[in-house]
Length: 298
Length: 269
Ligand SMILES: Nc1ncnc2c1ncn2[C@@H]1O[C@H](COP(=O)(O)OP(=O)(O)O)[C@@H](O)[C@H]1O
Ligand SMILES: [Mg+2]
Image (tube, rainbow over all chains, first blue to last red; front, side):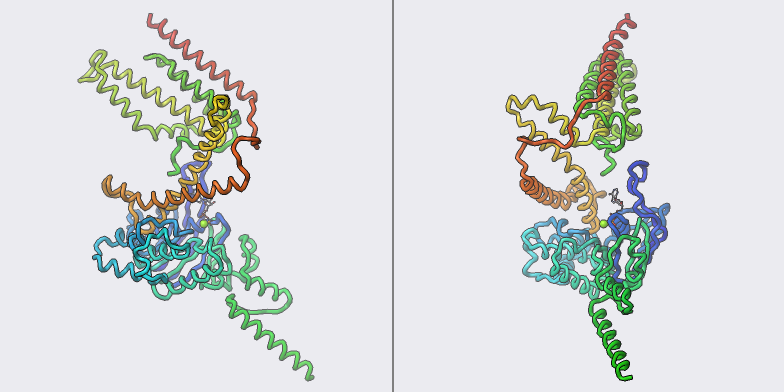
């Protein structure tokens, strides 16, 4: 499913003059099916407001621009939100805080019950099992436990199983790695890649972590003051140093190093992953050495 | 959820906002007494109270619509009490069917009373932040210390509760969104179904409230909080000319109401 936003606007407390907050001021953005899409931007730039439009948590109408997600036209009044939400899963910051049921099984099953009430017990069981195993947990071991007895990392995984159980095509994650230690973060990201390969077509991740988006996303949108300031590959976005500075963001480590080297007259072309950067640096190093040898021979 | 006007602070600069919270609380109590002083059928007294609210609203820089919105929240109560009066008051002359003139008058009287009281109370909460109200009440109640009433703790409980209302509203909003994203449906079905739909919201809310309480207790401990002993204040309250003017206006209102009560009696005679 392709996401297309055209001149999307949103104002919190629109009716009140004093309290009105213009959160989105004409967002134009296309997210293709299959993208691993990153959304970055300063606090308050409208990232959360935008992604909450994608499954109708914040309803929109034709007066506030146009938004389509696959065949769903969200700016149309008759949009079927329930069907949409089954297709667009959303994971919020600290997703473990949404757990409520007595057992892990019941909690994961929650979404199925409301999205697909006609499933048989066996069908549901299969889907819950698949979801729990996809997030890397042992189904038999965990299904009858109380979600509140699990460790923090396990809780987060169960919460995500509860979102992907309805087999969404798009998974939106708003600041999902906040509060995770480096190891937990690494595991979480590899879980996202697994999901991207096996279960959900499109992943959209909102994050403060520039390194994370630079290394994992194929496309990035930079939000600034309720608008999209720039869209492109990580390389396109993070080598536009001026623009990044204007939007108040930091460069990811690799882009920062590339910039510093460039200032010293050393041009390195990298796609901003660590591996590729190291490879390019060695290549450059070899080139320079070769040149020096040539010069010495002469 | 955030559109609830009753009990919400409207942040702006104004004469009324700058008044001492203690004075505002006292004056609102006086105003409510004034509303109650209006004797049966003496609607002119209500006119005086309404004038008072209008003047106070003008001086508070709060839009009238914001103040009036508070009535929406209690519309049900107002209509309910009016209906009871209209249909169940048996005294007086029957005008039509079972409706008596006295019933109609009483209904109007009660509607005016409730509306005016709510308008006044709303004006207080619109112009005084919850923390100021709690501090004001603590200050006003301080004489009770002498009979060993834990005034400070009482005020602390109140201000913590007030402080966490917006946080809890945010939290509820977040949890509702998370569960809606998983297909939860809070808007359809019968009453029983809807009540059941709240379970996935209430349980996470309860758990996070306990977590917050724990964190708050730790934070207070680590800042060496030890109750009211030796505690100094960042914001000291003091009286200004504004408070004096407020006193004069309110005293004028009460006198006016009493006078109008008598005046009406004179008119009748
Ligand atoms: N529930 C709300 N009510 C009023 N204003 C809000 C609300 N949520 C967010 N805002 C405001 O909208 C703007 C955009 O917020 P948000 O989308 O959360 O930004 P981000 O996720 O990029 O930090 C901010 O100015 C914020 O203060
Ligand atoms: Mg956000």
